[in-house]
Length: 293
Image (cartoon, rainbow, N blue to C red; front, top):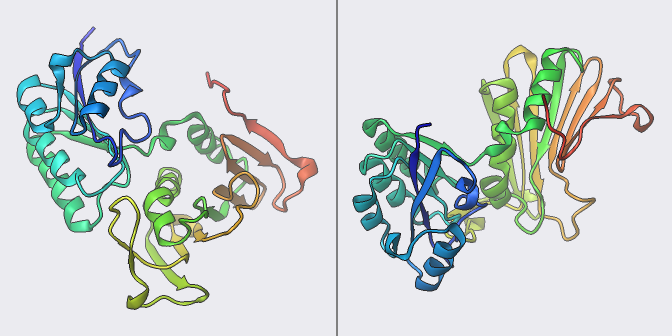
């Protein structure tokens, strides 16, 4: 079996290690988790212990780790956006084969383009942690759509968590999962239109503010967007700030077709074999923890 040397870049107190982009390698026989970098000394010591990395392979400077460790794969794990540009470009330049990057990817399109270009020049693959598209629910949804479970898809409804981050920040931090799922299921949109509101009125330049976690400027606490896909499929994304979140989570995905509805929500997939929603007809297509053959 080919073994790959992996390293992790985190930053305790400034995005930490994202959603387990460090421990993801534990238990993978083909991966030797060789090194970790964290500018915070206490966070570095904790990461070394958590990841079973010897202290001599723990670095406060990620550039030193990249230079000395000759890695194949690197996780750029912090959630915060202010440092990812430099981390990704340094990783690509070090000769790694693959980079696993926490989302959000970049605060600006200019930085995103530079990061992608650096990887292309180096021949390195980069993946953003939109892991929803590799999960069983995503693949079961696509399988059921291909088998005609809802007939011809007509409308799709999607949204973020719509908590205190509702609006621009929800789209940037959490809505990317929803948008990536739309692309996974239906391809890339042909056109997009959207509007942004602040407290019920059109948002303007004076409403821009700096988001949390160095996310950069964001706008609005309510947004609605429409995405047009091939075959007449129209998808809507919505997010607005709520004082009280309704139900377990208002995000997820609803796919409405001529013969039925599919509903992705909080780790499960429901199928209504009728174009009008009827709870009496709903069946679980797949539940959390179910393994597909």
